[in-house]
Picture 1 (spheres, rainbow over the protein chains, first blue to last red):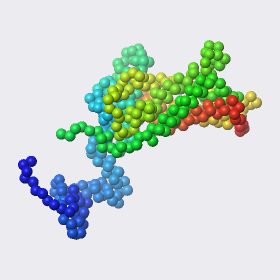
Picture 2: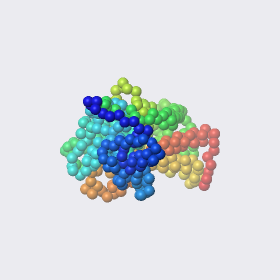
Picture 3: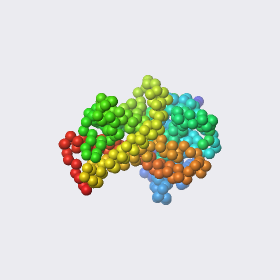
Length: 186
Length: 246
């Protein structure tokens, strides 16, 4: 910054030059106010016309399923699903970022692990992703806007698979007798 | 650059006390009642009825074990509940405040190991406590059926229904267990490649449906098992009389 900026004074300052912002600007102007509009891009280059964007979501009169919840979920998806990571106490309060994957990644690994590719990810889950740090207090599930049952359908099934390979003495013995390596295939 | 912060920094400070109090109250009342009843060692039988706290009844005449026979067996069902994926969540939140509720910051300065170290690493034995629970449930079904056979023939008393409803609720609790769901189907990557894959798939589907209600079954079966014992206690000491329905 070299100090070359201007100062404007207005009665009303509007942030965002989409449909809602510009409509508000017009109304404020007709009421006799001095109006400033701040926008990141071109005037009207906005999400107003998107299926679930701004005004469409707010009015919810086009499609029954198209309301602010859908909009919120899409925004979260667009934000790469980080609510569960953010709410997790293992990461937030205990700072285990280095040792703990977190719910978002467990869902991803669960999708891969429950696949017929014949690879096992239980070792990865136990050591690098530190699934043992999760104490299944379920905040990730509670916060998920997509309603994914993260704890019951990803983390607990993965914990059980880790038990299969590392904490079940009978299965260990069975593997030894059969001569099967840990966690390979079925 | 802004420092790394978590959602808890911005979240509204929700009151967590009303969330944990019912859990603390429910579990404490049950624990105190169960302990007192287990130590009592009396008033657990009436007619064809047997209290679930004392089933299976071992060494009732104190030939080998001088204390209450309930102490010999209660560790079995207790271990199933203690290592249950739902109860773990409940008591980690309510008793260890780890976390007390979502978006409620915890006291810093504690070292946190989750379930990676002793003693909580032992939670991984949940499937073995499940095997134990299946054995206990078999005895309870036996008791429930036996409760319909009175001295003067087959009949239905209020106690028979109490024991039957209790064992049904306990069965639902056991069938909704996460470990059972894993063992019977969840551990497979490919149902069509496995032996009995089709059957296991439909079983897994049904268990998954029950599993969604695991918390509900955990609580109502806890209540029903306590109530069944309480009913037997009252009956056995003569405080109430069993109503014979049929």
